[in-house]
Length: 423
Image (cartoon, rainbow, N blue to C red):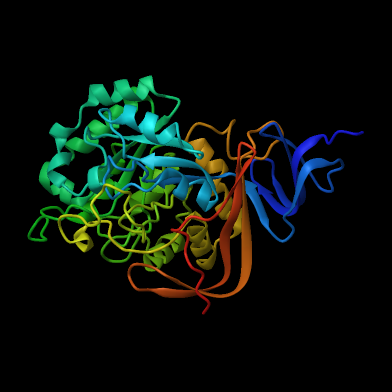
């Protein structure tokens, strides 16, 4: 009796693997949780074969902007596997949920139990992402401990891959640039990239600000190093890549030439209008974080957390209920005119490089860990909308079907996945 040489073969899918240059029909074989072979009309048998003809087969998708510190971050945090393998995503990067004070709990209660691979960009603030940074008084310079944060980052390099901080008008009005200088110092001392949020979130109580939002990006870019990340290029909030006159800040192109990177950080920030302006001005994001959390998804809070914030949840800076996913964000970029060969690296090779893990994830190269995402690519007329009320009609829709995490299958059945609306 001849033994099957492979545990699993994915037959006949459209494989796109930027790391190997493959973009075409091929079979992918998995053995012992790793990619065993990838080629057209792969000979041999397997214990299990899955027909994926007509589907897109990618290296396991990487979401570079997640919020998954459940309970500790209040309603803000979503369950890791709901955002991860149950949404067709194999690797998640929690952006700023954990801090030097709370990282041990993040490791034990979030990262270790998750079926998804979970990594962290550690918060520059000692309080981390409590209620999605709802209380601005906690986020001033006195709330940043450079030495403790560097120590935590160096002691946990297996999971901590960067530092998270916010460059926005409310914070700069209150404290100037001291918080951001401290965050840049943490990044230098820990030798980790700094993920810099742009777009207003901490307005003063009377709605006024003492700083011109258009001054922030040019000032902050001077603090950043090659490899640091500019987040939310398509934000609908003041203080982003596009100024009040509808023009891209000239400093953006200079920053990209210096080696700074750009992450979409979709969330409630995303605006089709701003995306069109930025893309037309030549800004092609390096990575595509979905930025889903408990305030911008229709998600019941975990048991034991308040069903509503003490204040009206619509006042939360990141409010904007929706159901979306990393695949949905990819669909929006397709609708804006980008191609799959431009988009796929954002959730695979580019993301792996940002994390310093290009040799481990983001590829289907034989020998790599068998993280694989399988997507449907439906054609028709689909209605997409953003939080500004803009609607566009897409002629194709990407949706996750299942993924393999180290060779184990997980179906895409997350309750936050969007309903496909035919136009």
